[in-house]
Amino acid sequence: MIGLEANLLAQAILFIFGIIGIIAYPPQIIQLYKTKESDDVNVLTWLVWALTYVVFAIYVFIYTTDIVLVILYLIELGLCLWIALLAIKYKSKRTRKN
Image (cartoon, rainbow, N blue to C red):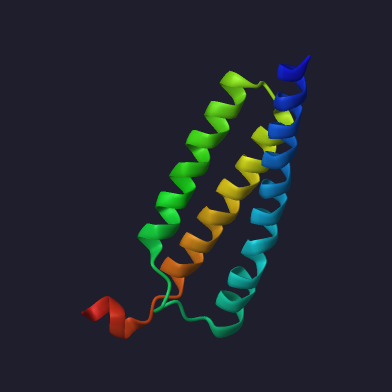
C-alpha cells in the first residue's frame, strides 16, 4: 500500500510541476509577439527543452501510462516549439547577416 501511495504522490508532484511549467511559457510568447524581436532568445536551448519533453512524455507513457502527464508534457513540447519558431521568425536581419 505504501508503494501505491508513493506512486500517487510522485504523479501528483509531476502534475503540479507540469502545470507550473505551462504557466511559465506565455510571458515569453507574449514578449516575442509584442517586440517582434528575438535576438536575446537562444533557439538551440528551446529545441533542447523540446527534445527533453519528448523524452519525458515517452518515459511517462511507458512507465506510468498516465495519459494526463503525457498530455502535459506534449503541451509543454508544443509551447517550446512555438517559442523556438517565433525566435527563428523574429531574428533581426543584423543577426542573420553575421
